[in-house]
Image (tube, rainbow, N blue to C red; front, side):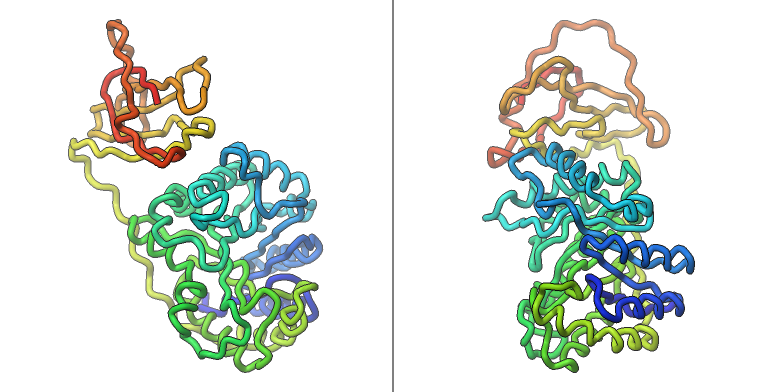
Length: 414
């Protein structure tokens, strides 16, 4: 398909129906976001289904107080509670078309270190709610990040597990961001001052750079709000058009970026509401007539290394004051086929008490391919000693990383 404009609109206003019909007729993908407007979502879905054009369709809302989940809970419990709330308020037009509609269950949770709930919490919540939504057949976009967030190094640290999950499931989970110029009267022509690009406009590139660094596929990304200021756009229409042209060319470099939604056609946002509809006819013609160069292919994902027999410790982080998040795939080290690896599991019947719980190290055997089978039960041995892992843990009182492995069945106290 020809590399066309991927800048669309947030909301619904005069002229947006013509934009949809023109793009659909020309078989050009568009991007459309609705804030709690079921009828508009259904109209776009029907156009996409009838034509076979893969429009990007995003829905946010309508649960009350749904922007930020309950941050007083641990991330997993909060995700379960929040998804139940959002899901209970989804209109039938979204539920029935869940395979075509991307849902944003949150809006602008802060990842600033000085703000609650903090980067690690948002990362763990995003992964947990994405898995819940995907398990029920919904497409998830997380977490509608504030303009200027998150910090670059968090993609390879706190957000790494979420980034890897997005890379593994690009058709059902993606990253959504908000990017703004901050000032509607900002007069510098593209490509802008560094304080604007790439720190506000183009900040999504940090996730792409992290994926390339980790050797994983690039994640699906949607800029679900793109604009100048929260309540205005430039008075000079030519300036606005020049910015959109630059944004369109910039986004065309990234096939994994499904598009961006200009903020906003919805009512109640002063100059943005009043002036943005006047750009619809121009952007329609621009999209129909403008072709961008084909993008450079992304780097190939890094192949899995050949087994060497050397054990490589994989650090895993647990929020010790939350309920244990230790799953069967909590791999501590890998080894050659036929060798063994260790999994940490909470002992059955052992309660979780504050920051102390009993866990066990269990030895498993590596079988062919990617499957693992439990090793045969060994001959009875004397009760193993208890291992105090606190010397091997580090953290800030909430998040710790396991720095120790042991190759026999052992109990350990965290």
